[in-house]
Image (tube, rainbow, N blue to C red; front, side):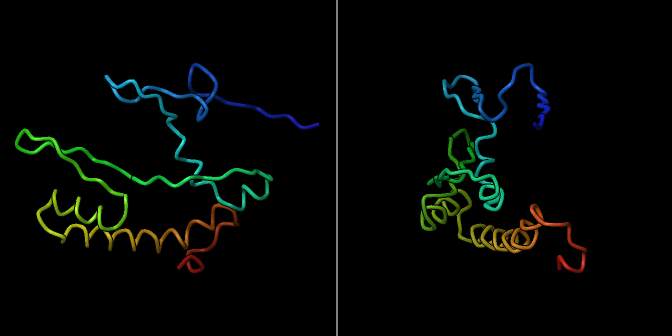
Length: 129
């Protein structure tokens, strides 16, 4: 008895279900939005009666860097030791890794307070503190 209106910005339907070739010269097809499923709140998954498992990636990110004509990069993932070593190779010390960890801690603290508001009434500023 209900109806649904589907809006699509692109010239074809599909959104997250359609893959693209995001890297010039590399024959790899990926969904632009596939990572978003990991951000879907568990409450919404339960409310909709969805049954699926999200798999964690070993590598969170890789940022390529070229220095003095030599390729390199920053690898985040594969465990704390691997990430720490990647920061040290790129920056020459462990200082940036420690700063990055502090930033991640601050971000996680904010996320713990803000994320639940995605499925609840918007709290007041005082309630969010």
